[in-house]
Image (cartoon, rainbow, N blue to C red; front, side, top):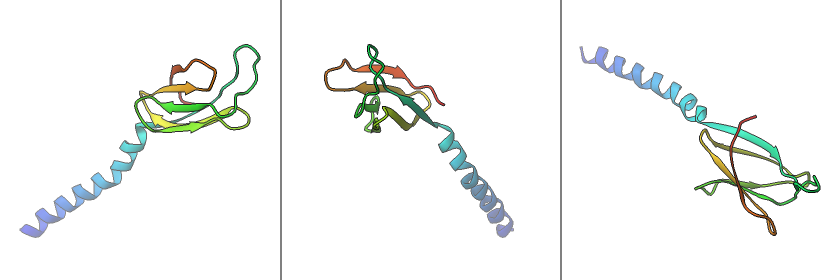
Amino acid sequence: MKSKKNQCWYKIFLVTLLLMPGVIFAQNREVRGTVTDAATGDALVGVSVVQKGTTNGVITDINGTFSINVSADAILQFSYVGYTTLEQVAQST
């Protein structure tokens, strides 16, 4: 009798483990973008793009582009020397 109960719990545990990665990854998303100067339209290299309230961040490349994985309700902070820091609600690609 015990072995059937153990098999049942084992199956429930196994199904839970198989479903867990989908739940964890479903809460994150990739956000991509390009940061440019509003006045000139030039790409800005080295802009810090950080998910607000975390240490999760990246820096824009030579073309001003970035890609970051953030939580579903993320707010991104963009900061660059000589510019005002901006906050933007993240929108996935």
